[in-house]
Amino acid sequence: HAHRDGNKVTFHMTTNGVAGADPAKPVGALAGAPATAYVWPTSLDPASVGFEGGTGILALAAATHPDFDDTPLFDENADGDVGNDGGHWHTHWVVLTPTPECGDGALAVRDIPEGSSPKLPATWPGLPIFLDSPGFSPVFDGPEVVVNVGFAQGVDLSSVAYDGVTAALRVNKNVHAPLFCVTDVFDVASGDLSLPGQLK
Image: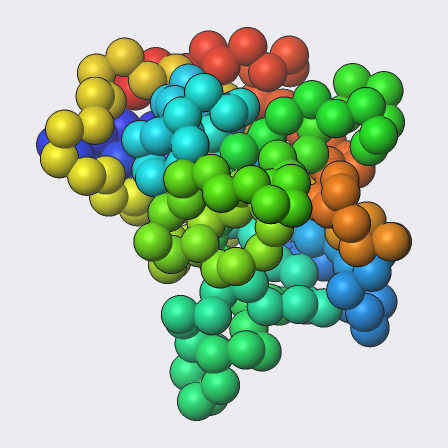
């Protein structure tokens, strides 16, 4: 579920086990690297967080992927190195689009074609995909994962719909488009990605 207080939204997800206890296992390379994520697809336009508008499904994700770091502004494990934290849980905004190359009916994080320059958030980490690293910290408590998100003033949060998904993603083995596919959906709160949740 999710609820708001002014321009702050708190996203909750309750799992069947211990949230965060089963992170992605490293494979030792970016090519084919796996990620595990708790994902909240929303009805918000991607422009609401700084992406080019009308480009897909804006989703919040709490993710871990030990083979690469995509939060160059943040040192999640506080060891003085901002480039080695991919295995620590962190958050992303992603724009998801149907991508047949990833499988029948599959989604992927939208690619940025070479030579194009779509609008991107200030904290975009430089990967050629619609992915932002905003720095919100996921909080784990038993079966629950919680993320507190701040939105800019002026973003209309009055009628936002959302869903909850636990999923696995994988970097393309050729490390090119589609770069980051959703490979497994373990559970969908609604059962059908109908975004039944309404922000209160």
